[in-house]
Every structure is written in structure tokens, then in C-alpha cells.
Image (cartoon, rainbow, N blue to C red):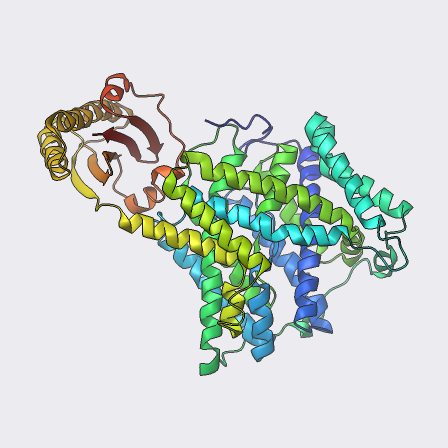
Length: 575
């Protein structure tokens, strides 16, 4: 099991106020430059001007801060209780620009509201979709995010004001990368925690010396200001027949974003604890619900959708070692406060593009490695290798050459021409094909009691005979089932139940082997939600509480996983 030794404070632990404030400010600094850069890209591409510009900045900071705070709050299935930095994100830029061109900002707003329903649908039917969001799909999504963002980072490194040497931008970026890398690799204590802000300060100092830093925007900005509410575009219900394809495209992009959000919810859990735990799927549901709330509020406000800055969140936790949810509270409050302080926003956003580009390179590199580690979480067999390889090939190919531009055109080109969308969709489709191409699984239900043994033995003998196994292999399969049941009977001592728990046996035949999942269901309520994402790809095994010594004699692999109200023992037996 991977141990995150660098984690100083876990989500449930109390972090000192001074450290909480410092880490929260680091998170805000990281995301603020991205917020302004992404908003500027959208505003320029959509030809927005006048009062809408100030409204978009105000609403983005306000909603981003509120949703960041909500993510950090643990409220049942509504919110997960982890740090998630939020802001306007790139997946919706192209389709939003297209919507503005077709029907204006009001049309874009109603389409975003409609797209938010997909997030809530994914949260509701998470159990039925558990085979889609696997470590392979997650890893591909993270690697494609990194790959798609690297050209942006490199472009920022080359930016410099007119009249300044073209070498100035790369020089500032190199200084920033050098300081961040040295402090991250070698520093300890407070210097390690302050690696990113120190690198930013050094980069800004070098930028001043080389004439790259422009202070004018910060000087001209007012200290306090309210937005012009006339900039709110409102909502439009005028969706004629010609624009139905645009609605479908928004729903497709939202589906990809939902898969991405579910993956991010699982990964942030893993990096937030010293000893990564089995995924809390109720928290993943909360991640999707809050993602839907963010999209819904964005649509009502008429701005580019607010989404998770997964790479920034991941970098913040890894650089500082602080995953306490209090950081999310403070960071959210800071973003809300900044919505009313244009002067502070202007000061922070005058950080040279070459500095933010250098940090983005580091963050994307770390995210790519995390994606690769996620793919390898449960091994890389031939099928998974093909899914990863083909998905990355398609994604990188679309990054360099959009072959669908001349074939589809219009909104479909915008949706499927994205390298991130293309790569993730290929991974999802191949995973679905792999899931439905395997042999049909077999299921047996009963009570967790010794009286269930004859039924289990008959079930396994029939299964082995149907697979044309020889007698010794069938006996080994039955023995593995018997020993698993005997081991699971010990679990009843951990629960006070008047009646025997339910026992569910799911057998998945494969080439030359059978995978058996024994589920001991100790509570009837919300069973389907609790077994969401229960594929072997998505879990952290825990075999410390049950003796599998005899069972291992019959099985090629054994895993024991504990959930709220459910214990699962997964056994694989080879022919």
C-alpha cells in the first residue's frame, strides 16, 4: 500500500490557524491566475464587453469561493468534505463560445443549466455506472489533462511585453522552475511548505529586473467595487430546432466532465490521507452533487461553468502536505472576499505569464505522473494497456490534428475535436466494450451462515463444470469458496445483528480463472450505493483482519475490503 508520508494534516485533523491561512492563500494564488487567464480567453473569444466583463469576474470569484467552501463541508451525500479549488475551466469554453455566437449569452446560460442536470444524474446512478469510472479511465483523464495543458504552459513562457528581449520570458520561467524544483526536492519544514510562493516571488523579482513586470493594471484598479448588475445576461428559453444539436453537445461535454469529476473525487481522497483508504463512494457522490451545483449556479449567473481545478488542488496538497478541510473553508472565504476587492485581484493577476507558465509546467508534470500511477494501481494487463495506449494516441492525435473539423463541423466539431474529450471517450467506450465482452457473471444470494455452504458448493460445481474444468480444479474452486465462507463467518462478531447478514456471491468467469466476490451485507439500507465502484480496479485492499493462510493455498489472490455495512472478500482461483 502506498503511504503518503508527506501529509502533515489529514482532512479530519485540526491545522494551526496560521498554517491554514498560509496554505489557503497559496491555493488562491495558484488558481487566481488561471481564473483570470481562462476568463480572459472566453471573454475575448465571445466578444464580450462592457458591464458583462466586471459581472463575469465578480460572479466567477463569488461562486468559485462558495462552491470551494461547500466542497470542504461534509454534509452527507451533498458534499464530500475535502479540499477542492474551484474556478472557470476550459472544457466548456469552445461550446460556450459557439452558444454565444448562435444565440447570445442568455442562450449559453440556459444550456449550462441543462448541462448541470447530468452531474446530478451521475451522482444518483453512481452504482449503475461504477464500471465506467475505473483507475484506467481516471489515469487517462489525468494524463490527457496534463498533455492538453502543456502547450498553454509553454506558450506562457514565451510571453513578454513589446520592446523587451524575447529571452526575458524563458529566463523568468527558468528561474521560477529552478527555485520550485530545488525547494521541493531538498528543502524541509517551512521552506518546503512555501516552495510555490517562494518560487513566485523569485520569478517576479527576476521579471522586474528584466522589465517583464507590468504594474499599471494593479495601480489603476479600485480597492473596493460592486459589479454592474446590468451585466447579468439572464436566461433564454428560445431553443429552436436548429440548436438541438448544440444542447446535445453541452450534455456530452457535461457527461465527460462528470466522469472526470468522479475520478477527481476518488484521487483527491487517496492523496489526502497518510494511508490511502478504500474509496468512500458517498463522498464521490458528494463531489458530483457539488459539481452540479457549481454548473447550475454558473448557468443562472450566465458565466463560464465553475469546475474543479484538480491539478491545482493536487499540487497544493503535495507541495504543502496539508489536506485539512479547514483550508477549503478559508480558501473559499478568501475567494468570496476577493470578489469585492478588485485591487487585490489586480495585484495578484499582474504576476507575469512566464511565472504562471513555469508553475503550470510543474503542476502538469506531477499530474501526468499521478495519472500513470493511477493506471498502474491494480496492474497493467494486456487489455488495460490497449485501452491506455489507444486513448492516449487518439487524444494526442487530436491535440495536434483535429481530423473531425472537416467531417462533422459546427457544434459536433467543437465537442469531439477536443483532445481531452476524445481521449476520455475512447477510454470509456473501450472499458464498456471490455466489460460487456467478458463472460456473463453469475450471482447467488443467501444468508451469511454455515447453512449456506451446500448451496455455495453446488453453485461453484455447476460453474466449474460449465467452464469445462477438470475435477481437481473444481475441487480447488469449491475449497476456496468453503474457506472464504468460514473466514467471513468471523465478521459477524463485529456487528450486533438479530438476524444473519445477507451473503451475495458474484462469480465472474474468465480465461482460465474465476473471480469470486463474497459480499457480507450487514445493513439493508442503501446497499446499491454502498457497493458503487466495487470493481477490483477501484479499491485499496486490506487483508489484515482475517487469516487467509489456508485460503491462499487454494486461491491465486485474495483481497479483503471493508465498507460501511459491507465486507467484501474477493478471491481469484485459477484452473
